[in-house]
Structures are given as structure tokens and as C-alpha cells.
Image (cartoon, rainbow, N blue to C red; front, side, top):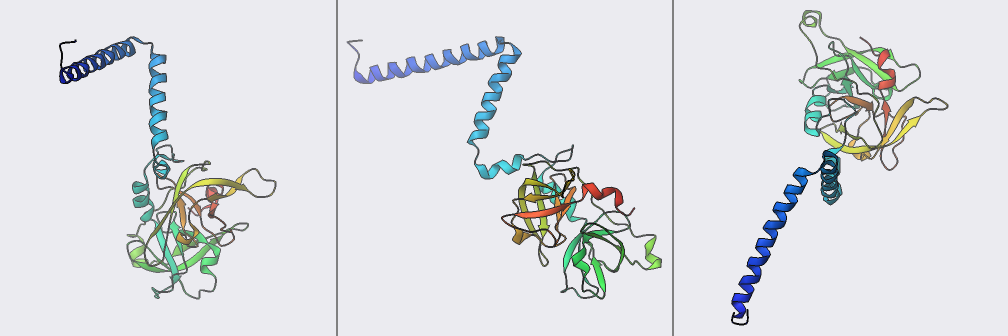
Length: 259
């Protein structure tokens, strides 16, 4: 060693470090392969938790859980729900949109908030395919916020006209990632999580939920949906919007929907 130059000593040190790293890696892999399954699973969980903790908080919504057993993604959900969202306003007047609604069956029945049709003398529904029809109120929810409208389709078109309709989600969970679509002239996406489940009076059945979605991105009648594109709730005028936005839950009243 005393006959080596400084450069040779540095190179020798690097070589020893390199060889030591390789040996350590070989020993570690060998020990993991020989370890019991429970030990290996524990190590994997530690690694997963460490990586998850390093993710920026803004990306955590991307791994949110859907209330649908099939799960899903936000892009798929938007494409799915977008095919069943309609605009409601005065028939023949494209600038009079008063709210949104969502199609709930193949004949085009629309579910929306009661306030959307108040004050309109000539209700109309515009579907995603651009076709508009006069609307007829067929059902009002007696003790709730919803109204159901049917399109008045000309008799010669009725047999050949069918609509894509939304599915209804099961009850959402706290912390679940959800989204809504609003906007009259252009779609506005709101994304958030369920931060409170609301019950009415002494009933233990949830009637509404509070979300972290920005209320400025929501219209009356805007549907709330999960990551599979299934409808969770509807924005109604009777619910307040404080720091986020509250939505009326539709799962509890699904059995009363028009068939």
C-alpha cells in the first residue's frame, strides 16, 4: 500500500466498494428467496407504503376506490356518464338551459331536480346526440327533490328510438373518489372525495353526501358519479353548498324509478 500513488489508492478503494456492493446484493437476494412467504410479504408491504408516502398528495385521488365492484378510472367514467347527461330548458330555445339531468332508462326518461322545471312553460330535453324533444312530467318524488321527465317522441319515431342510460351506484364510502359534470355551454369537470354522509332526522338511511367538489363547477341537476361512471347522486337546489358541494343520493330511491 505504501508504494501506491494517491490515484491508485482511490481506484483501489472504488474497486473494493464496487465488489462489496455486488456481494451485498447477491446475499440479500439469496436471503429473500429463502425467506418464508410471510416475511417476503412484509417486506413488499413496507416498500409499497414507502413509495405511496413519497407520492405528491395531488396524485392520491388517482388511486381512489370506486363504489362499483368493477372499479374504474376517471377517463372511462366521464366517457360512460357523458352519454346519458341531458340539458333541460325551454323547448326550441338553445340559450334557455336551466339545468341538467341524467337518463335512467332506454325510453329516455330523465331524472333531475324539481326546481329545473319550475317556471318553464314549454319544457324541453336535449340529449347527447343533439336531438331535442318536448318533455312531460311523469313522476314527482313525494318527499324528495327529484322529478322524472319523459320525452314526447313522435309516434312514427318511437319504435326506433332508444337511449343510452346511466346505471345507479351503490352507497358511496367516506373518502371515495367521485366526480361531477356541469356547465351549460361547455363541460366542467369537478373531482373530489366524499367527506360526509348525511342522514335525515332519526333515519339511519343516508339521504345525501357532502363532497370536496368545487361548487362553481356544478349546476342544478348535475350528476355525481363514481369511477365506473355510475350515478351516485344529483345536485339539487334544496342542498346547501358550503366549503364543498352536497348531492342528493339516488340509491335509496332507485326502486321508485320509472321503468
